[in-house]
Image 1 (cartoon, rainbow, N blue to C red):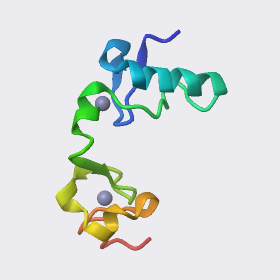
Image 2: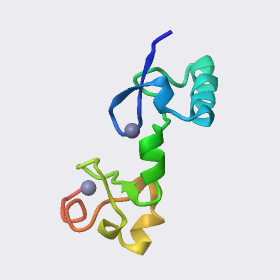
Image 3: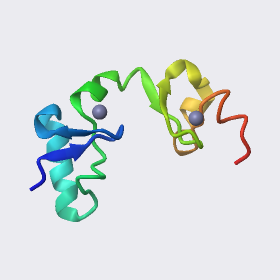
Length: 92
Ligand SMILES: [Zn+2]
Ligand SMILES: [Zn+2]
């Protein structure tokens, strides 16, 4: 069993840096074959805490950015959420 897992934000962290709830979620998906250590779909404790303050841009930049970079309508857009103005300016 790998002792390091990759946080959804991209860093590799040891298991103790993930909450029990997140680890259980990961273990379950790993059993189903939908998650791997490199693609866990879970967040470390540090990033879970910041979750409410940042959103992932699903545009070309792919960055996690503060809420102020997303308009209200954009925030609800989920999959097509793009940061403003950087990614919104780019052609799809
Ligand atoms: Zn993290
Ligand atoms: Zn962006």
